[in-house]
Image (tube, rainbow, N blue to C red; front, side, top):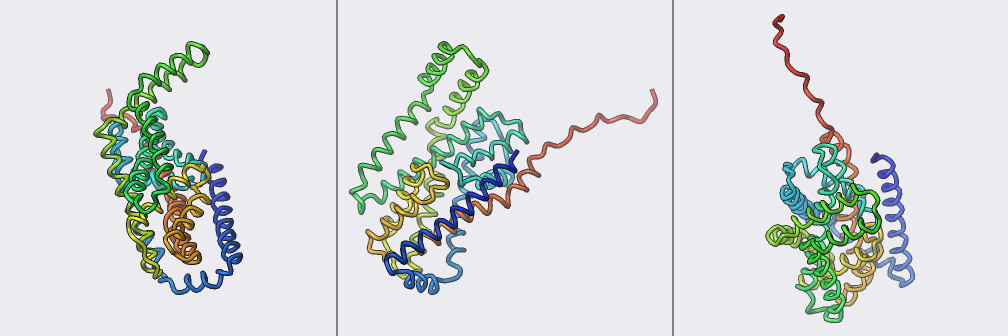
Length: 330
């Protein structure tokens, strides 16, 4: 089942990587900054990508822990190491619109534990909603230097809050599902599944559960924002940590809203633009963005492809043991 999706993901990832490189070269060439960017890249420490990768690894570890926590609230107990294989494998399909391909990790949970998709979708929703709020909170922290974007951040936050209230108090959604079935009178099992999914989602939207997930999300994404700050420091164009936090988080929000695979394009354009507003030269902003993306999204995609065989092997159900016989003739 996964092979066709993985093949498509590999083609898309390779295509987007090439397009991103070509776009950067064209922009730099048009501004006569290509030679400068090459010098910036040549002067950058060779281990800089590894530093970004280390911060990204912290991010993935914290998010995996959050996934384990949410799964436990939905009745599934999985160890951190085993869940890491499933969670990281989902990144192989991160180059999908809105990262919907990452839901492939639910297939592993269904295969190994018979964890229903209606609970799995609730698990994935809790994971994504926590990320959205974490990014918005990080935007709010660094908003003082970017007051012109306050309206955009608050508008997205208002929409997120409205959606969360509906999910946390599911009566309205359940009433809508019941009304839909009353009008259509088709596929009753599908409507029952939707009711269960709404109720399961409410479990991960409970205040205590949500706040734990949000805390882990803020810590995980701040690690990647800090990596941008470190990259700029090492490239010789330091900016304030709060400004770096806003730039990373806001670029992530915009990249997510574009629904482009992996947010590629929207993320990079916004980051380079906001870094320029902070006085970072275009060639340095492009190199910093490229290094950050190489050590985060492309690193995650590569790690995902490497984790898929492990996840497939770990998720293979064990054959049922044959009943033991005493060896004594009746």
